[in-house]
Image 1 (spheres, rainbow over the protein chains, first blue to last red):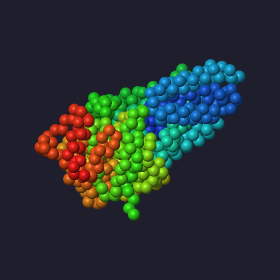
Image 2: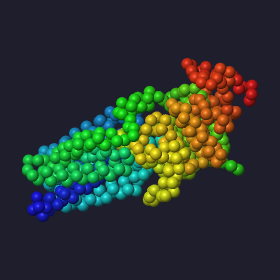
Image 3: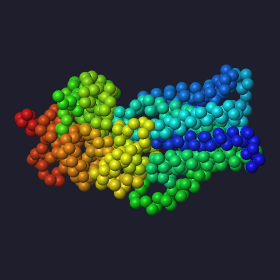
Image 4: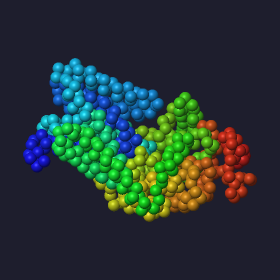
Length: 291
Length: 258
């Protein structure tokens, strides 16, 4: 493993894993709070068309993926904001279009092949180039900047949209911002875990962390720590054997962490004064619905 | 001239082609304590939401401190207490985090949470008697306690005007009394309060003006309604099997007065 650290491809892979581990859970915390846990999956589907478009036009697939997934994220947010039941179906149509468009364009593209398609669907962290790292790095800076600068407002928005409105926050802008930030995160994570597993790194570390924490800020911090551990740990475990795919290893490691936290969380909670049970919480939801 | 806190003229709202408000004229002056009352489905909640611009008007206009809600910039002057705590998708948030978020309209984007913000949140928590739960997740609190968190969140913002949507609904007697005491302090400090209520309970002595909404129109605007006859008995429980009767009942008593 020590000699691996000298190799450039491994260094690049390590940097990519670190950035993904930090960014995905940070954005994921807001998305999970907003009950949009599957947003990342949706954008991931759409991003595939972007990747294929890159191959077709000869531009860097990462850049075209950024463009297309941002457009997709904005479209998803606009459908969501209209809040009608048909939005559900409209989103589904967008996702299918994204995957089908991606596969079709990849087939037509001169350099396109199933192997390349697979590397984007399931990740190919070892093939990350220096150019990729520059783009991923810039996107990661943008994502963290959004979280740092707008975090407080995004917390209010995701916690209670009405309250955000009644506080004069730019609700539409913030909603688009969180969607676009999610799109950038999807592209960052695309090379590491693949488009089909992107969302896992946005959701699992957050789900793990909230078993152990009481506050929003602490949930986000711990989720970022878990994200980095899973991403780097998964990458390292894949060096043990060439047959271990890094993307899947990262996600499975994150899932193991979740199961572990579930047990530890039960133990931690026992000491708390009063915790509402799941059934109480769900009965509250029912009340809300029937109102 | 003192600006009115809220001023709606000819306010109409339709949702899904159903008329909810059918021409409302309502001006709330600073220092007033207004109870908006009415049967379920009368449009009382929609009325206060429209005052804040949360529900769009389909006709007429409404002003918040002299500006339409979309152009209003001094949102720190308004403290909104929604009906229920919207608990996010399971990411925990501590009571302190939620209460401190009430400061958002007073905070600037690039500045960190200031000592004043923290002090305001702490005193708001104390006012509702939840200081000892500050570090607990709001999700772990009972319904009445969550209601108190929402009130503390509005208090933390130190606004001029409070808008409360059914602050007493489904809340135990102790919490109602605590709310009444908190509001009494606000009234003493000259704050404006608009609250939606089905029943006033211990809030009754504080109310300076009662507005009764019936089928999207204002049916009574003036002295707060006092329970009469059977309804005044202590421990009496209101049962309103039919919305129309409920609205017509107390109304008949007032028409002579005004």
